[in-house]
Image (cartoon, rainbow, N blue to C red):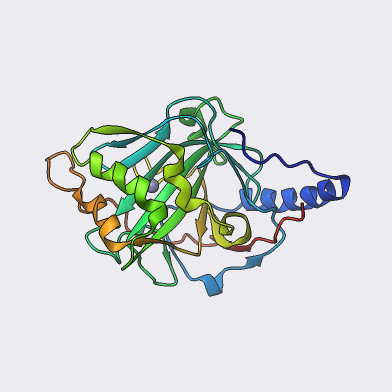
Length: 272
Ligand SMILES: [Zn+2]
């Protein structure tokens, strides 16, 4: 199923061009190693970028697989149409490759990125590669190769029913290398207005796992996704290489290099 396709009127095209040059400015920013701790107050605020456009994520007919890799829980579509991301700080279209999680021993140290000193239970990464490259492997070699969207998961007392399908999947992949077929609506927790109306931070950074290549445009949403404390605890029960639970798979925050910028983006509601 295709996502929303938006036809631009001539007046919107000129607005689009203005924003594209903003995205171009972001593309020229200096990259840092990731993750980083971010003070929102110290970020310049931009309101002129186009809203982010998500197409074919939770509303996709293709089957998907959730697998315990021994390092993380890893979600990818098996084939068929791949979700696409554009707008915001991105120039061109980015193709969804995979989604995975980072977590830690408790409900407060599981995120890789830290906004205003606040820790949460887990961080989810949607990894995309620039459609101008033939594959993710090729894209990693370029500063505009990858776009990673990060969501911070906040543990709360009540379970979030929109996370049920994902949690059911996690329950079936406790053993390493176990995989389960899962439907796209296991991503339904991400379907909220915040995607294209909410605030996020963006910066040029790196992979948070080896080889730590600086090829990523990061997009981290400010508003957390709430998940039940018991639901999120299933991640900590996934088994790693020594059959012991994967207790922690986060990289510590890295230093900002001199002149490094993080932009705080307020998305302006799309006029359609
Ligand atoms: Zn990650």
